[in-house]
Amino acid sequence: MNNNKLIIGLSLTILILIAFNLINVFLPEKFLIIHTDDFGLSDSHNRATIEAMREGLVTSASLMVPCPKRDEAIDLWKENRDLDIGIHLTFTSEWENYKWGGVAESHLISSILDKNGKMYPDCASFLENADISEIEIEIRAQIEYVLNSGLRPSHLDAHMSCLFRGSSDLIFLYVKLAQEYNILPMLTKENFKKISNEKYLKYLDIDKIGLIDNLFIASESKFDKLGMARHYEELLNGIGKGFNVLLIHTSYEDDEMWSITGTQPYWGTKWRADDFKYFTSLEVYKSIYKNDINLINWKVYKKVKSLKI
Image (cartoon, one colour):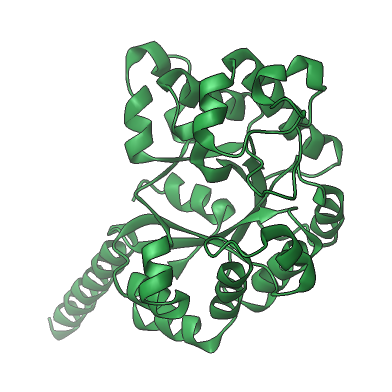
């Protein structure tokens, strides 16, 4: 009898432990992708991006395929194939003295180029002039440039969010092409609402969309009032449960970057160098640990999402 009680007691203990572990597994957790944009913009950006991923806590990056230093970035990507790198679909050329055109032949995408054959400097000008059929040509060209180099991007996203600021048809095109090439498209749940009807969904596989709960990025006011380190510390203190993405930009503070960004106070050289310094510092490790944040990349995202937590 005593042996039976002991067995029953042990069985209950084991069941409780199993139940406790299952609760821990399936309750929503704080997942965060720390993602750096603009890989390919410059040699400085390229080298700093790899260092931030190797030596810091940056877990993802994406390549601007139209940019002048894309091939150097691709070479670095090939040397670091285990890193999580996607494509930063680019339709603007925002720096005054540093311009680029498209990847596709210019006569095929004339509506997305200005009179000098370069991309427009902002999303509003791009969206006002662009023909959606030519946007498709350029998206395909950017994706295929990477695929033809022998690399496989982890995901797609959009430079300056231009593709997400347009019509529902444009967002649908972005997702549809991503799924055609079997690449995960990042999309906030807010932007997903724009295509969450039968007109679009019958052509899409929802399980193959990189839906995220919250997208964070520094602002000009935070840069002025707090500085980057304090801003990011406060942001990490407030990270909630679900899938979160924090967008940053990592480069060195060097002559190359100053020549590109000039004296532009926002999104410029100091901003990007401060991002690099913080996300390779001991302080970011402390904040991640203190706030019990699970750092992931897009490859892990797909595995975690498959658990249906």
